[in-house]
Length: 253
Ligand SMILES: Nc1ncnc2c1ncn2[C@@H]1O[C@H](COP(=O)(O)OP(=O)(O)O)[C@@H](O)[C@H]1O
Ligand SMILES: Cc1ncsc1CCOP(=O)(O)O
Ligand SMILES: [Mg+2]
Image (cartoon, rainbow, N blue to C red):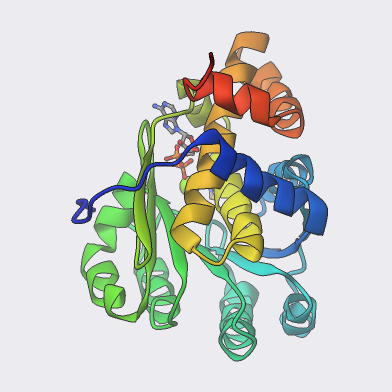
């Protein structure tokens, strides 16, 4: 997605303020996510200060989402049951005005995923987080959904965030983040947690991805490859403080 707005500046204090609210309020994120990324997503949410709930049963997702601070829908391993659970989550998000983050994993690869993504994109006020391939495959639907307050988050070497209330670029992160499955999926969950405590979804996404990217940079310095990087990423995210954010964001001195 191309940027059409002037970008906002994000400093360490604004990121730290969002992180502090997550830690203080411990929002629960109801995640309907893929079977590959469930564990890393839950652990990353805990490291971020939030609470994961990974319920998937079609008859209970609405109840589980009802008291949550935000909802994540990720279609990475969509199956017949999760296809039926998704509308239930959309209904809760709409009726209870809950933040909802949608991750259209591999939407470029199957007509079913295209169909489900387009159903989700009918909902107002959602955040869509995908990589460049996924966002490009949905370009027409994303363009149309801008009419109803969509926030677009395209991750990669530089994350691009664009919503009705602001636009940001985040240049933090490390290539090892692409060598561990589920790191992108977990990014969507962190954005959802931030949206639970920050009413501007673009700012919430930028804060979450800045923290995640900086944690990735720290983890890469402490690890020897993708396996140890995964553990180090969880540790680094859990250990982030404002002084570290300031130093990594070039605000020292
Ligand atoms: N080349 C890169 N350099 C630094 N960070 C990256 C790079 N590619 C992806 N990231 C980071 O990895 C996380 C997952 O993004 P991405 O790889 O785009 O998702 P996905 O796994 O869904 O394809 C994001 O936080 C993003 O900023
Ligand atoms: C490998 C795989 N297959 C279906 S979902 C999934 C996980 C994708 O995770 P991510 O997009 O975070 O790399
Ligand atoms: Mg992904």
